[in-house]
Image 1: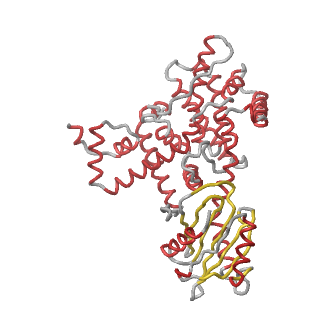
Image 2 (image 1 turned 120 degrees about the vertical axis):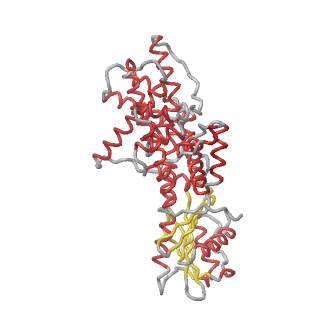
Image 3 (image 1 turned 135 degrees about the horizontal axis):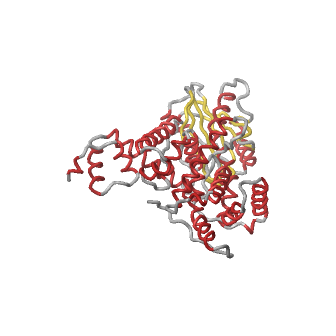
Length: 263
Length: 184
């Protein structure tokens, strides 16, 4: 009872996040937080962080066929010698080459570097979109390769290169009409850029790039100076919309694009 | 308390009894050691390297183990190895540190952008802050346990934990990325 009235310290807030408080103290901390919204917001952030960390690494707590080998190679008397490392490398290489020898978990661990590259490539999407915008939106004479007057040809051509049923979203309701599009490299593969502009000549670009594996992400936002970019991945395609418009406006545009793009 | 049950021990072959018992205990700890090593390392391969070094050291130092809490002892060895490695790498920048942004072995959230963001924030932490955060948030160790394992005062554990959590939050915010609900 007296415990419940003890002042809440920062250590209590961490213990709350980490589940180290007893029921009574936990309630006391919750009551205190209800009167301290700023601290509560921070605590909720820490909780989300902890959950994210657990989700990100829990999958690694697995046995692998290599575990016993880890021990047998390390257990050889005499301290770390080069041959032991070599033996270990050779052994894991053998496992790597003979897929069947690798256990379910081992295989997954060995397979994951492929997905690492994927993440790095995806990470570039907003950057590539900004570059494309900066290069082409300011272009007076040749902003696009194929103009809106040949829209059907444009979407068929780019769609074929992306191996995807491309549509050019109709953004007229939001004040933007299609200028055209071009083929350009995204993540080292054929990608597409569509360009739109409003009656004042303000332009925005939509970048589409092939995503190495199916995924689905939430919308992300990035701003650099006055340039705003929205990006997301849906199925086999990564999308990024860039423009020099307000964040709220660009979100409307991105949502409209998302609605009209097929997956 | 540790919240992830360690994997079952699979015994094969026959070695001298005492050594076998020790090795089997280590073997049963490998899954959680693997998770901890990966949570400290910058990539899957760095994580497996750290794990290998740790298991080697644990076996070499077997005689130094005082017979209590093998798990904590192994985690302490791992933490020290990680700090030493990190120092070596930063002192000799010519040694390439694999800078790839690792994904998890098990794709839990299915959102690769989210993971990239998380790993970036983690890689910005110092090794001392990162290890305390992981021991508490993932491995489930109590603050006093961490203080004992790392031979530091509990106040230092708390300040490192605070710093790590705040730095992570700030770094995630700095990316200026906002997660929004999908409109569909």
